[in-house]
Image (tube, rainbow, N blue to C red):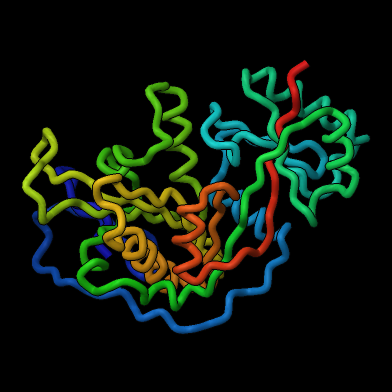
Length: 303
């Protein structure tokens, strides 16, 4: 599969083996090769704690440090997932001492102390201790689906507009709503979104429109990301420009990413969505996702 073509040459990602780069002058011919049809297979069984670990590998923090069985994560404040302590297993010390260490670790980095609480998975007494400290909570849903049906959604014309790449270019980043003007946050964002076992970025340009960007390229209508980790494919960063919504672009993006993930052996899909994001939840309902479990980000109050 052709993943890049620029002034440095071409890069092809074969179905088996490592990517191969070569000079444009060596190109003799090319043709469009469709993705293999995804075969129906039930998602693998996975307990909530296992899915939390898979999701963490698919969105790896810039800085990680163990605290017993917990994992402290920091990424200059880019997303709560990459700037919270994952509290699976035992921290190896009494909970009040562990949470004091968490608070100090994030304070040293100028970040709020967020605690990812998974039930089951986190210590049974953790919520009671967080309540005693006056923590505030933000719920997040983990939703799962069979991958093969997802790969067949949308119409062919929509799917044909989706382009895949191994890296998020300036066009992809231009629509990603979490980008800021802070150079440190943007650098952390690029590190996090490119991390994971096998990452793909999907983009839809307005190839039918009349407007172009300053460099002559058509504007970006939609973007998405998928990370493949064995049998699981994680979807995220699904963004559609406000003027291009309700055209099926998000469905087309996810269908093409799902087909790519199926080629790499994945059979299950997962995503994480904030519990109050009714619009996204409705979209994922229509795509066949159901809720596996709910976890919470608990913010420790500053002293």
